Image 1 (cartoon, one colour):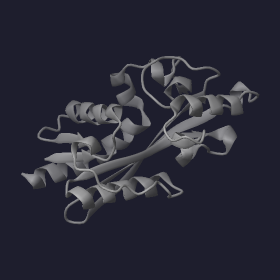
Image 2 (cartoon, rainbow, N blue to C red):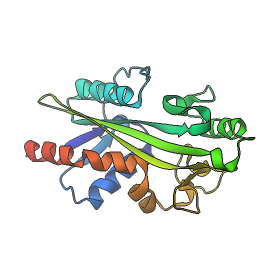
Image 3 (tube, rainbow, N blue to C red):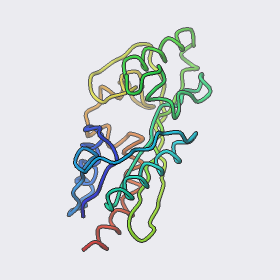
Image 4 (cartoon, rainbow, N blue to C red):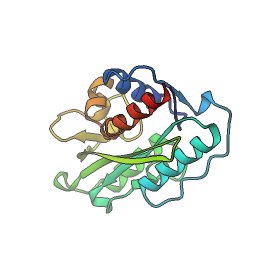
Length: 203
C-alpha cells in the first residue's frame, strides 16, 4: 500500500517511516507531497489541531486517491494560556521560521518563574482512506519550557522543551528516543490499527 503523508517535512516523513518499521508494519510505502503531483492546499484556518489535520488529510486523499495521513501539531504553553497552539508554526508572523518562533516564546516567558513554565507538545493525526474511512487521534507530551535552547536534533520548539522525567531537551534526544516519547510518535501509534486495516484491505 502506498501511504501519503500530507507534508513536505522530510523529518516528519522519516519519523513515520521509522515508527512503521519499528512496529513491523510491512508492505507500506510512505510518500510525501513532493512525491505526488501538486494540488491546491487549503490554508490551515481551523481553530483546532483536529480540524486542521482532518482538512489536510481530506484534501490529500481527494487529490490523489491515496490513503492519506496528515498532522497538525504545536506547543501549548501554560503561561501563555495554551498559545501558540495551532499558531505554533507562524507564531512570529512568518510561517515555518523556527528560530524566530522559538525566540519569541523565550522572550514572552523571560520573566516567568521556573514553576510556571509548564507546556505540552500536542499532535493530532488524521487518516482518510477509501470506503469513507476517517479517523482523528491526539497525542500529548508534557514538559516545560527551558530558558535557552539546547541540542541540535529535531526541529521547531524541540531545543527549548524539556520533557517530564528528563534532564535534556527533546532536541538532545536521539531520533529513536524521541519517537518513543513524542506527541507525534504517540499519535501515529494510535493510528497504527487503522493503517494495518487499510494495508490488509489493499492486498
